[in-house]
Image (cartoon, rainbow, N blue to C red; front, side, top):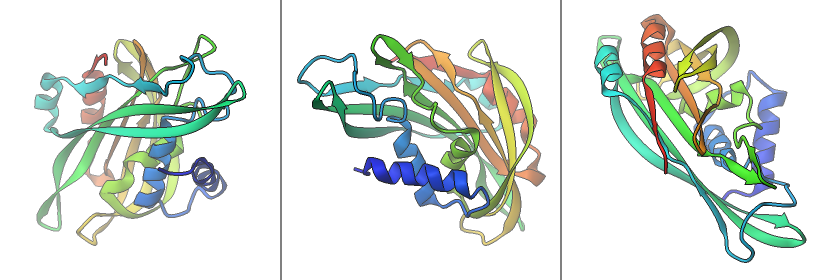
Length: 238
């Protein structure tokens, strides 16, 4: 289990140096912070006395019709559990958050070979109640830090640069999406390329928040397919 201080150091480093290489370790550290970001340091959680408080997300996936149009395939749906001890009303409580990530990918051609280098992911994270109020558990992560959650398909990623923005429909709501570019290598190829990241804002879905993200080689020009995937997101509650 990561220590809370490490999570805070990771977030601080990302804010101080936006051009620092993004590594898998940094990405996973940000992902570990995700489930606890909205409650760390709170002094009053609305949970039963004595027992650990557990918050479990539902599952957000992409509809089959959207997959058929875009060529993406489901890679895996995984749980990302995070446990922390927090101070609540003078006592220590264990809080466990279970996030869920559905990851899709598609092959692209690089130097005559095909690699699963285009990726689309949907993170579902539970809404946490603090004194009866819902708190966005991804609220402490900015767009750039959310982009870091999807870089593990690539190596030596740096020079992350914010570009355009657009609004599209996710789960019948308007979602703002920020487009980033970065330099990097497709894992396992050694081939350097410009990467394009699409990072969506958190959208409410019942008792959860849904955060979509996508990345692909910029030359692949998959932005329209990413929009179709965004529009095709579905949500099943826990």
